[in-house]
Length: 375
Length: 260
Image 1 (tube, rainbow over the protein chains, first blue to last red):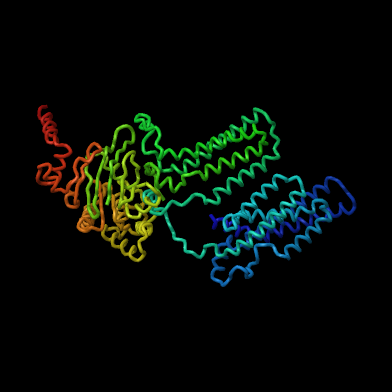
Image 2: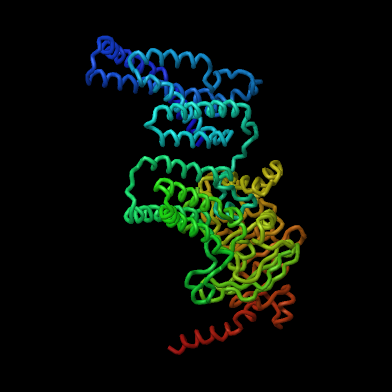
């Protein structure tokens, strides 16, 4: 996965000169008429269209530059670069051969210069390019930091980026949040470099699948599907992001809205519950059939049926918690965001863990279906 | 030491295992025999941790199966299970797979590579060692699965129908010789389910006979001869224990034929 992403970014990096070659003439072509219209006080549709396109071009250029600053310069994103770096005496604190992934003073000068020139014809939109730069830099960092750390900075970035969506029409608020996001991303990037070599120097044994029985009866403990940190951070970020996205949506209060929220959230909750059950119960099934349970009176097998508790609780939370919160006067966005976060927290983190369940539950490990070719 | 304590299980309504108790001492080679559908594979599965019985429990070396993650993992490190239809990764070669299995059981690399080479040679798989498992015949795949069991060097081996699955005479002989060697030593504890008395006689220290989900006899072969009063081969002893009226059934079958 990481290699694929690195390969994609490596490919994108190769397109940079082409992008610059494309964006620069476009910017000049757009800037010239805009400047002329501006100078001679012509205000018409042509001017506003030209300004709009110019703004987009500059924003795109800034976004590409910011994203590539992270993707192109952080060794963790580039496998070959990292492999080579590990053969050198480089250590945190020394300058990186390809430059720092955090923007430096020269970048600041460039941004200010372009912003200054842009302000000649972009007027009140002159602040857009640096804001876009900050957001793009934060976004690129937000993808990386949860993996290379500091993880908290990564989570904070996603929360701030979601908040930017929430206040997207208020320029000052967007600018302030973009600045905070940039500071967090920059701090995070530099801190992540200090954690070099990210465990990459430890040999990773090649572990192919050994077939159903050795995989299921392995003496190695099953690997967790999600880390403890991600198990708590992900629901909170998703809940917050949903709140930010939905906060601007006008939903009419009333019975129909409540019913709609209940149905949508209920369906989502059931799907998420089934997903958890599939992760736990895949190839680990009840030791007796349903008919066997009913006819022998062993309706509940506590050591097996504990697997149903968290999915049931998650689905119920997703369905009924928004109704309770709406009735208590919460806004629909807050009710949905809180319920999604709560349901996901339960579905991801409620005990037992997958490892404990698969190692100790009263269950039957099943064979792959006949005809399956294992690879 | 394998200790099966009061194990009862049913998949649907009909009990498959009923209050089964079995104690296998360290170093013993025990054959589990019985008619089809009488619970041999279910009992093997319970011992292997593939099945958690509805009542009772299985202990291996003093640890109870599926009690805690730590106990279960400790047991798994000492036990290897050969299921009746082993599912092998078709895209790996036998050598790759055996090396992977050995590493799973933390066998030191040099010793592992040497052991893999010797096993492949023993089961006449040298020529196919580096071909995909998917391209091997059913019998060759069974041999690979047996090699996978042996390469782990696990002190407890649970083998469900090890002699079935298309093994050729040389494969049968090789496996028999390996098990005989294990029976002479005390390093390996082996429980194998098999319906073939002739093979059992040459290999097993003790025989457990299961019928209708219950262990009806568990003793050495001589002990079984004494308790049944039947001398000679194990198949006669087995017949006496499991279906004493077989001779009568055969007479009735041919008598009906002769009357036509």
